[in-house]
Image 1 (cartoon, rainbow, N blue to C red):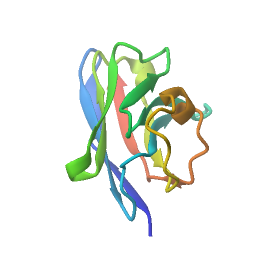
Image 2 (image 1 turned 135 degrees about the horizontal axis):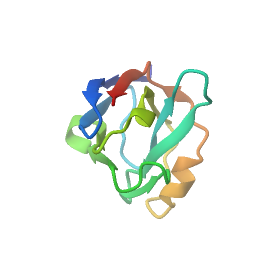
Image 3 (image 1 turned 90 degrees about the vertical axis):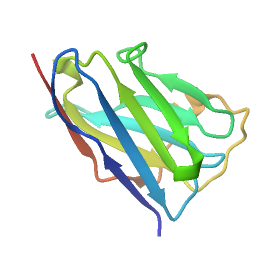
Image 4 (image 1 turned 45 degrees about the vertical axis):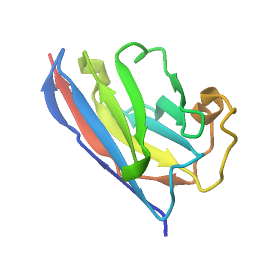
Length: 130
């Protein structure tokens, strides 16, 4: 049974940082697409970042580029989202997503960003105050 568990959310002031973690069980992150998404109240879910864990290529939404970093730790079977220079508009529930289907290490991370994921975590809340 696949399970994704996010952690690391919280409340910070604008300009602060948080690191979100997404630990997986029932699947390994090796050669997979993994994505981070967020949904603010009253808004649609949007992609934040994605990684091709085989080739380690990454992709970011324009709104977070230069501020957020997605990374992986294969030994811990965990994917991270380092978030710096947080702003109130980053306030949302953050979700990670993954899939059992292996992908080529040469697939672009943009492919992972647009991927239709089958497994989602329960979410972790990030609140940024001004």
